[in-house]
Amino acid sequence: MTVATAPGWGQRLGALALLLLVVVGTLYLVVDQVLVARYRFYQERLEQQQGRLEQLERMATSREPVQQLITRIQQDRNITAQYLPQSAPPLAAAELQQRVKAVVEAAGGTLRSTQALPPVEEENAVKVAVNATVSGDTESLQKILYDLESQTPLLFVDDLNVTARAVRQRLPNGRLAGYTRVQLNIQFEISGYLRKEGG
Image (cartoon, rainbow, N blue to C red):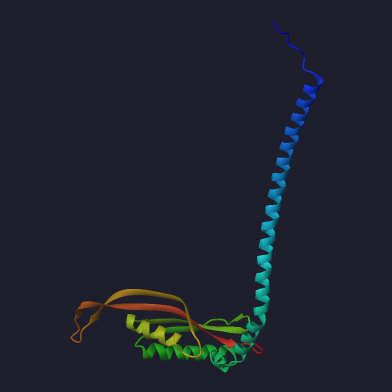
């Protein structure tokens, strides 16, 4: 029968050294992973910031040509022709009302009413607008919108509201026709711009 003997100092020191080696190795791996993760994070942030810097440098180099283009556009006489020629908003509104009347009548519609709206300042221009109520058919509506928006100076149609109703026409003999026609009631805002002084 063999008797178990207590481990000697050498074995104890070996076990302690092995335990210490395992603890130090694990600690090293944890610290290494944390440092590597932090390094990757900062590397990605640096790459992002370098990309942003390159983008800003490209924008800075393109600023001068863009500024020259803006100056050239502001001095272009064709651009000036796109603004209403009148010097004051009330004069421009009156002219706009006359223009709407002429376009509506030429398209075969009926102008029911027009009303000048208060002028609105927008950066380097003053918006002059007129509210109009017109009746007509789909063909006249198409002609009115085309004629207003294809002119010089530029005019813009906004807040277009169209309602339709069926109407039976009266024949020359006084009787109602056996067919109906679509009658449109059209409301819209037409606007143009006056150039501000120094704008």
